[in-house]
Image 1 (cartoon, rainbow, N blue to C red):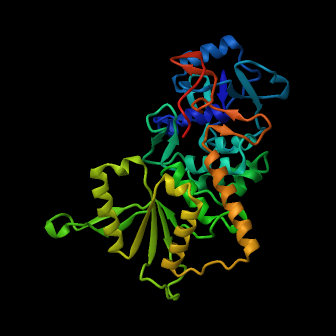
Image 2 (cartoon, rainbow, N blue to C red; image 1 turned 180 degrees about the horizontal axis):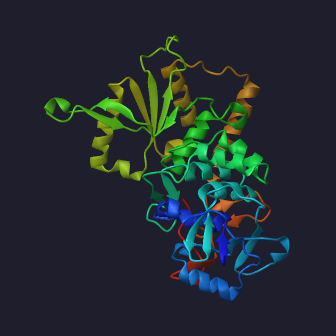
Length: 377
């Protein structure tokens, strides 16, 4: 095989809008022949010219090689030692003689470069309805179906065995979520769910973008009487035998991006809130300015506890002060984890699309030097 792309290069391939087309049965590479050497600079130029899925990839490209002796410093390539054995369905074809790591393997490979928070948001992305794509208008691509799931990554890890990074990824999978609709949904979810030691609020999220059957607002005017709503986050009362101070059986939290401020969209949002409320689901909405305000988030968490009959934590003044610091630290780390900066090593990796990126990128089948790129998500 000419090349097997891995790590950040494989990730950038799967962040394309059309990457779902790679995940077909006929595209699976069952037993890859891992190259015995790194590609030369001339070979790299030939690869980027014929592998269209590398468009936008950051240079150096990351590849797998079969032995430690095959690795050496190079301008355009970083080589990683391949495993003696890979689980089935670890790779897909990109072009004749060229393969790429699948999403489950990418998650494992990125343990080498990602902090646990960065890795958590990466898994949420791979298991969610979006991909980070700084070359797109909104910085994201939307997916009808996720590339993988938390359960599939867990099964992959079990088949891989005790390899490097497995324990780190296993810890992250305990907190990762399926079906997130955006990085901000993931960040909001983890802020609510993490325990106080980690800087969270210890409020369990039962689902992201799960369907809720509601009666359509305006159905008395002859419209269909039912429809499905999918709140960003859904929280339930801990048990039905607890007498909550309000009659809500559930609380929804929706993150409002810029398009929600459009006049037409605001009318639709009112319908959504009213339809959920009619099902005893109280719907809160937050925007970026709310997310960044810890005092506001404290208030929101307190109201949600009240709505669901969850007791407020009772802390000493010292405990409260320590918790506030942890909340601020968690929020800062979640915001920094933008999918373009990987910072677990002394020398962080910065991908094309980061605000301060300066380097080389694959554009129109050539390696091109750029000074700056679109601001990161």
